[in-house]
Image (tube, rainbow, N blue to C red; front, side, top):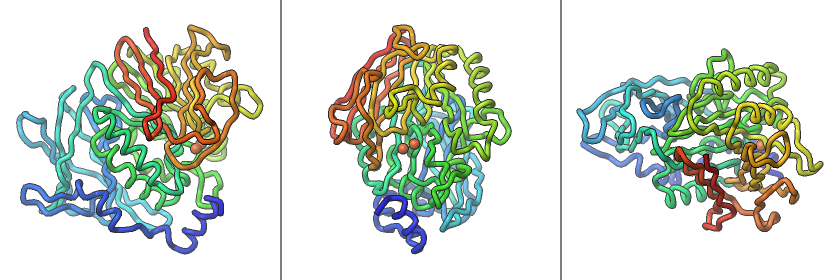
Length: 416
Ligand SMILES: [Fe+2]
Ligand SMILES: [Fe+2]
């Protein structure tokens, strides 16, 4: 049975709403531990800290409930600071294929850079347990890069996400380079994805990237990525009707551009996407003075079947050359490759570094070997899930690609 048919069958039988309650309760047990005389606020699920323009001073906190919470607010305090602060939360009611969910969002502002806070959600006499929140600083930091976490069985995504957090507990920032879920409009896919991501997202900052699978409806036809857009309250790009489609942010010594590659999927709905994004990209790049310029975008630049650069490359590579982008991370092909530096579509010591991220979910694709790649996973037919750690300092970008069981595929250092 194909996975597409499996998802349709599940939904047609009304089984999309089924989720093992005991599994969910066990996974969220730490979040729901009673503290300080409050009852556990068990309605709160899928807590995530979401990126803002400047993570030194602000943070978006989001979560989901099945019902509206009475008198809900966030209590937060600087560790060793001047006591409690409170922030009201907004919510939107989102109709999903088999459920109505309440997605809450609260933006904490005027935080102190490079500091440790704790926060919790309170509703009347109930609260979640305290969660850590670390504001960004000016210096070195580490991040975790995953891609294509889409699954039939989300235990695979959970395993690699939990493994990465266990091995790199100090990583502050996390991304998934698109195709977070297999079908972006299937509610149970988001529930399963979030539950698996519970550890990695509750106390780190998430900066997501939209992929083509976020732009499919339940019949696998192209559609607007409503499921994705509702999940994450992302920094504004200032362009009406394109909020959440592409954005940028600063973190430490780096400026990150999160670009959208779904021109084909969104052509009917957003025909101006390419033009508006290209213009925004130029403007945004001109306004940053950070030392490193890093791009995350879902679709890759290369077509292994024909052995040539593709239409995504035609659009973006001249811009990357023009704007002096240091490194581009892509996904979509579910295999890890390091191409080294490329300028004007040729290998060059002065070009942009191109990294194609492997998959973090259970959907295995096999692409050919190619001379464009300096590093390729050792056995393409059995290539397992992998993730990347990226250490950013003013002097260097240092990346390592590892499998869930610790095998190292690649180590690479870029210096300025
Ligand atoms: Fe994918
Ligand atoms: Fe994809």
